[in-house]
Structure formats: C-alpha cells, structure tokens
Image 1 (tube, rainbow, N blue to C red):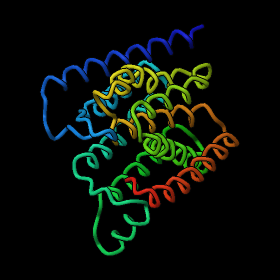
Image 2 (cartoon, rainbow, N blue to C red):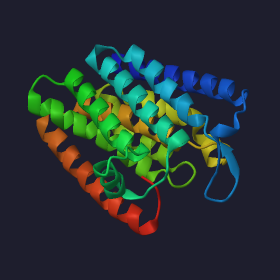
Image 3 (cartoon, helix red, strand yellow):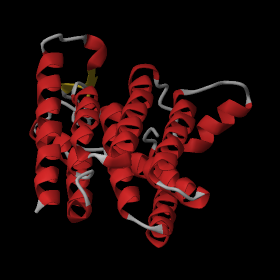
Image 4 (cartoon, rainbow, N blue to C red):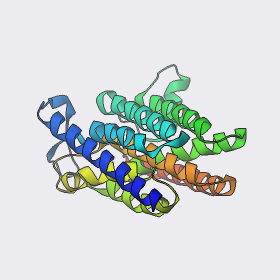
Length: 247
C-alpha cells in the first residue's frame, strides 16, 4: 500500500510538472522548436523538454539511490536529444555516424550515442554495487532510451510504449511512475498532432524508464533485458538505414 501511494505521488508530480512546463513553453512560441510531422502538419517540439523536466522532478519523491539515477539519466539523455533536435544532420544509422567519427567529424548521432551511453553507465553505477551489474544496468538504461526513440515514428507511439512498458514495474517500485506520469501528461496532445516528443522527450522518457527497469531487476533480469535491447538496436539500425529514417 505504501509503495502504491508513493507511485501515485511520483506519477502525479511528474504529470503536473510536465503539464506546467509544456503550457509555459507553448506561450513562448519559438520557430526553432517547430517541425513538420509525418503528415506534413506543423507541430511544436515542446513536449520534449517538458517531459524531461517532468521525469526529473517526478523521480524526486521516489527516494533511494534510484532517484538520483533517474534524474541523471533523464536529464542527460534529454539534453543529448535536444542537441540532435536543434543541430542534427539526420544521417541514417549508427554506422554512418561512426564512419563520420572515424574521419574526424563529430555528428549529432555520435554525441547521442556516447552521451547517452555514458549517462546510462553513470546512472547504472548509482543503482548497483557490483561492476558487472553496473555495466548491465547502464546498457539497459541507454538501450531503453534508444528503443523509445526508435518507436517514435508516429503520433503517440513513444508515449504509449512508455505507458505499456512501465505499468508492470509499478508493483516493484515507484520509479516507473515518473516516465509514465510525464508521458500521460502529453499523450493527448501528441496523438492530436499538436506536439511531438522529438529526440529530447523520447530519450528522456526512455532513459527514466530504463532506470526503473534496471532498479527492479537482479543480474538475470538485467542480462535478459540488455540482450533484448541490443538485439532491438541492431535490428532498428538495419531498418533505419533501409527505410531512410534518422537515428
């Protein structure tokens, strides 16, 4: 009962903070934060920074070492995503970005890859005691951030994915309520094609959700999740290059 009440508080704080940030950002109206969506409609990207703020503030009442890990992972992943939203050159696939890096060019995709990977490892180090578990937790956190971004190709898909994947984790702790609350606060506007999460929001939600997953699992669970996420990333990279959608 205590965990349920704490989860409710975490979710409510995340949702409230996200909504307040989104409403405040929409009042400013900056063309740099507008994009054409898949249907050619002009939408804003304000849901992205709003959910990044929401997951960070929402995680605070969760308590424990998971709180610090979720704040770190969510904000760092959101910052890397924001850089890509503003400066991204939209090259396709990790191979293209790594190839450019070998030639001395640092692309936005490379910054995301190494930035979110480093943030995941740092957050994993806060969550777990043993070195292998720290690394596995980092892979789960960074991998989940990438997975949520990977499914963000149509309105509402990323937010609904977070809600679906986060729900089973609620009985094991309140951390999953932070990304779920933040996603719930903007999902209607996302589905209504008034806003989109962009890389900022998708990565922030995914990293926070990954933190909750990593916190709730022991080594066997971490291995299973990490293996699945690596496989999904490899498959997604292949499809991304074939379909011409950006990383």
